[in-house]
Image 1: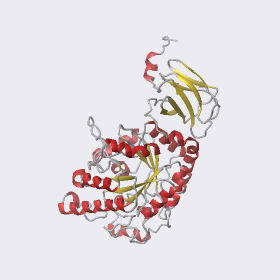
Image 2: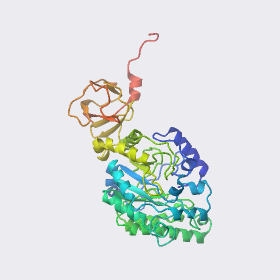
Image 3: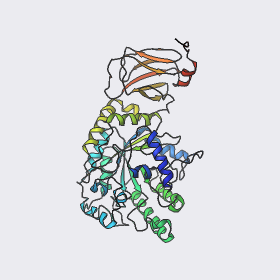
Image 4: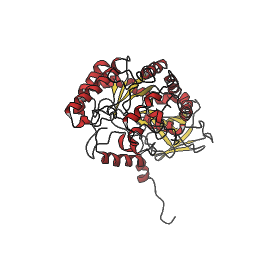
Length: 458
């Protein structure tokens, strides 16, 4: 995390969980520990980039802005326990006891092929996998520790299997890497002992170098939790400068404490003037949690994806594979349902969009592209659909994917579409495509303020 002020983080996370859209209640560890905190009131968010130029960032971001939708994969020894990725800390499991999980973590070869195929089915364009989570166990072949998948029961480089699978399906490749490490002997001492800090920072830098050297082109480096150090003591500028030298096209997130290329709101959708990516779970857990049955529906997922697209952000959606590498059936079913909608609507998500100035509807969300507004109707009201406060003149309308015009009338307060099907054309989310004479704008307060009022007592 960016700061170790636990009380402030809990207050913010609890508030965001109460008011944030597209979220569900999280385990305490996720509420308190898993996302960078907002800056204090009145303090602007840091602006990137830090170790590159703004022009180069825009060049590197071009594919990412159009990709829009990615798969996050949390997988490690915690999957063997099946009780959430924070099980080691939350249950106080001793190191020697937890290490025994490496003897039982021996997944089926090339399990990642099914992940990549599912990502493609769902309409995703990139993947980000945990190469090392907070537990310290490495899924890659590191020369700096024996606590790795290739040197324990598994005997294979699981990161290489993931990279090969992702590329086979045309996916961009991202690596998650936790700076915090509960296993390394200097992982906590580094905060108070300079010799320990030197050893730990060299270890972390060395592993990041391995990841950026041994697997060909890497598209995303997704750091997490910079406890117990700060950006200066992590030597984060030096670290990321090295990364950019090894991988000139890479995108780096903000979780070293440096702003870099994109921000990472977690378990909530929070638009930013900077490039941003909302990461979310499909239930309430990142790693495999066999008892967690609080699953989002396919419709929930599509609604979140639309909202991210509306505000020109990305959506990174997590799966937590089982110890053998298989994907929980619920995740498969949900993402297959998302894919059915994306089969006919992917162009709306992946094509470049403008930040939408129309945001308020009783049963809709919106995507804007030039003079066109796509009204994404989540709860189909019947043969009439109305949107209030549109200040721009509509010139044509049709159901998305159809050439048949839709009738409409418009006054200063309401744009009304009539003669629509009584039932939703798409059982998940139906779309009206409306063209205006200028980029669409909305003023609902103007409706409240200016429309003619009735008489008292009538």
